[in-house]
Image (tube, rainbow, N blue to C red):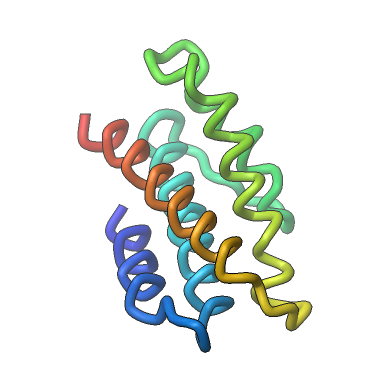
Length: 121
């Protein structure tokens, strides 16, 4: 969870008109790190494939049979939605709109809060 919080702190620090992609990118990395923390905590596994999109499936598997299972499908969709913006922010050189950056930041923050609830008991 420390990495998730650190990535998100960087995202917040650079979130301005000029650095929207960098803010979104770090927020997405924060959500991925939070997902890894959940999966390691609940199931001692994390996404190990080349594609981060499998992270949603692994999250649902990790939450299966726990009190977090009812929320896991929605949170997995949220995570995959965040990851969808990763390529645009990091590789394609597309400037994300301020609205998209704000949405990424908000969704990542909510995902990290949920992860912290799970990991901190």
